[in-house]
Image (cartoon, rainbow, N blue to C red; front, side, top):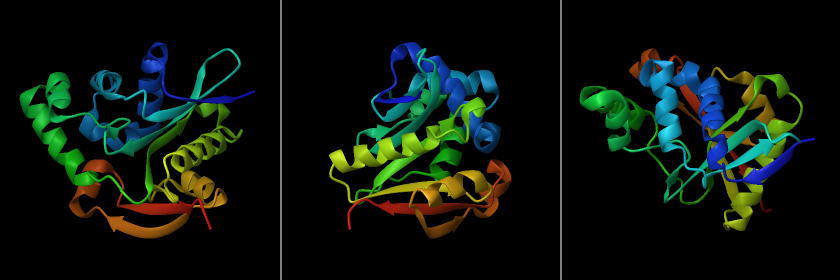
Length: 195
């Protein structure tokens, strides 16, 4: 049995950082690696109040879904955070790369900031439950729709989002950044919450 909760307790931060890295390391590895520094960075910057989590009956973390607001994002961090983990030069080029990839908050739609599920329970409804919790949070906050961005190579995630009512609305090409991040485009998908 899976239960979904709002927020990431401090006792689960390290598990959350590891899960986030497992899900997004292939995409962010060239920028935020090596793994030990990436984990330190995520542990430092994750905002426990900007996510929903899925737990099993023993309290183990099965998945999480972050979101962005005007107060910040689940796994964003600042230039100071990057410098603290990667040093002055390392923080500078990493920050510039990440800024070029994504720097927006959508004021009209609730913006999801990553969804990840433990490999051993994928395909068992955890992702669906997390998406529903994100949609519920959006409704509570008064948003008419939820928006997410998925990389063009993540076919499985895109299929899940389509099954859950998300529709592709835009494709953004990365240009030369594709060589740094390992994918060529992001696809913006939106799910209306009210008719």
